[in-house]
Amino acid sequence: MQIFEALDATECVYSAAQLGGVDPKTVRRYARMRDAGQSLDAPSVRTKLIDPYMPKIEEWVERSQGRVRADKLHERLVLLGFAGDERTTRRAVAKAKERWKAGHRRTYRPWITEPGLWAQFDWGQGPKVPGPGDGEPRETLLFCAWLAWSRFRVVIPTWDRTLPTVISCLDSALRQFGGAPTYVLTDNERTVTVDRVAGVPVRHPQVVAAGRHYGLQVHTCVPFDPESKGGSESTVKIAKADLVPTEENLLDQYASFAELRTACAEFGKKVNNRIHRETGKTPASMLDIEKVRLHPLPAGPHTLALGESRLIYTDQTVRFGSVRYSTPPGLVGQEAWVRVDGDELVVVADLSHLIRRPTWLHGPAGLTEVARHQIALPGRLVIEPAHYPNHPQRLDGSPRPPKPKPSTEAEEAFLRLGPGAESWLIEASARGVTRIRAKMATAVELAALIGVGEVDLALGLAATADRFEDEALMSIVRHRRHGFRADDLVVADEAHSVQPGTSVWADFGRTNNGPDQGSSS
Image 1 (cartoon, rainbow, N blue to C red):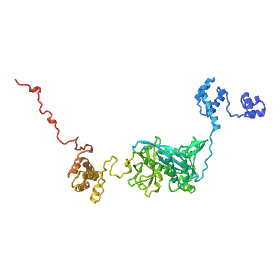
Image 2: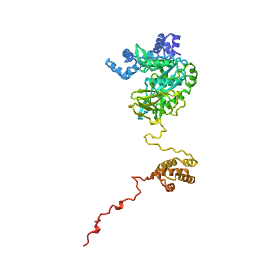
Image 3: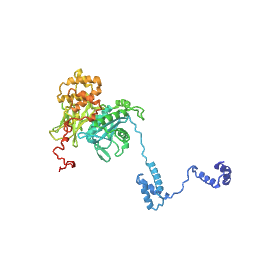
Image 4: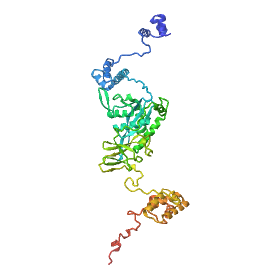
């Protein structure tokens, strides 16, 4: 029988104890707990050694806003006379912090978005890539923009985060969105907010002018509170995880800034064409719906902070400060903007108006930094060799070897043998070898007999060893069949001579005074 049932039936503690099979003290304790309205399943709370000090612990936790360390509080408690160990203090501090957080926990209201209303952008630290000019690794930055309703993301790599770069990246992002939203939210950087008066942010005048140009308003989040713009913060986090080489993602280092730009474009395609877990649709498909509510963009970019306007000449250069600076191919006749960034000159061009898309351009077109050079003295010429890939000079200034272009069937048949045949033709022409066509025909006939690979390798060896006589090719083929290795090839020069040595003349003029040739008596 249950204790309460027996107690209600007998109304006697001793009788109920006999019916329930328990001690009368237990029945009396249960009766007092029921009369006091206490739960019978709750654990009994015993007094602890630290209980008299709990008000002081809660005071310290409140004063530090839940950040105080338990070991430091234990040192203070010992000075107040606490005789317990540090483990007891840690448990008490943990409970006090838990109660403090319960009363100070921040809550969030879900952001109710609508098409064409909000966009956000922020900056993230990018990978190191070879810089312009000297090729030394330099830090890069990732401009990350996010359209709130459709979750469409744009990532653009840059070298800096100055005001012209901010406006250039914003223009490119808006053109990838296909329009401008009503508001743009970002951080409180000096390029956007120049001052704060009584807590009210004062906008940069050029940012206000840029917003007026695109038909939007730029707003900033609460200072030192990145949680108030979580969409762009999440975009930065995802972009850094997929684009910055780390030990976790096993990415290789980028060989150039163009390779990083390509990777950012591919990242955008990947995240915008996969299903978002919140909406159940791809951001690209939702952007098609949101474009109806976006404001049309002006035909030209906002050029107030991009720098001075320049025209790209037929030699692929722009002139600034009596110095000509090179630009990539495919931009001749286009308008560009130049500005000084420290000791460097930045060249920006609007690639959306190009009739023919350059081969080096990857990703969407728009305002793009196309070149960056060190500032030079007037009268100099600053050229980046990579801007002229088909120039007859190599990067070190030496002339490039000619590229064979067959014009007859015989020439085409010879060049089809492989790179060794091409190298032989270039070297033989440079050496002024006679009867080249006849020797080419002999090589083609020999390849039909013993194989193309063997003849092509022999032609490469002949070009390396400067052997262009009539029987040289056949001699090399025969020699290779007797175990010759390409590593054993000796080129006649100052270090390797075919003249016989003079070691046999070492003892010439010396007198042999050995023991077997003593004087005779």
